Length: 230
Image (tube, rainbow, N blue to C red; front, side, top):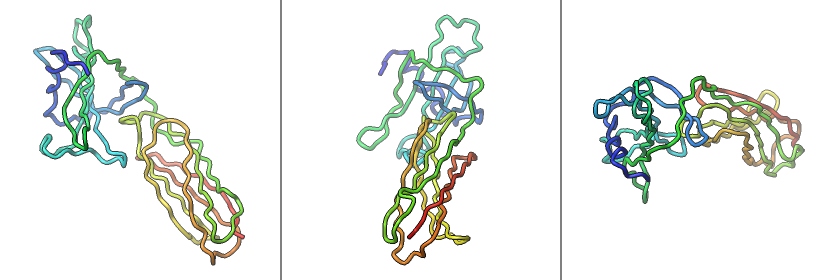
């Protein structure tokens, strides 16, 4: 962690302000973050602040007791001077962030001279290439087949991941037999998610259908597969 005066002076820049509703996207260490932009000043020089919210693995905001009166915690990228300042010769990016130690959040701390790029035309979040399957495709009553879905997450992800709701529904004819749900945090890329289900010993034999629904925010995708219970 950098400990220069410039970093420590910027730690409080924008720390007490609520992030504005001006959504843009930045790329940092290979990830695209959805951030909230605000213009500020530091020692009379304009600075650009880009906030992103800390989130737990389940997607909920991190709220630290005794810090900012229990408000959600925000990290931020800071550009000094701001992009519209006439003299850009000493333009520097800073990363200001909270750190979890022994189950408690502390900070903020900061790094100076990081590489950050504002993405002018970011891709939108997509869930695509959904392929559902059941393994094995023919199962005995009382067994535990795997309900598999492979899909691709693409686009800007705040904090590098996105919460995806994976819903698996098992149908027999027009009757919904069972619903299962997972709520993982997913990084960009192609992944495979597997969930087991137990076939009841008294399940009627025949052809069943697995329907998969994926949702991340407003983005939604579906897939399906047939399997046999014998």
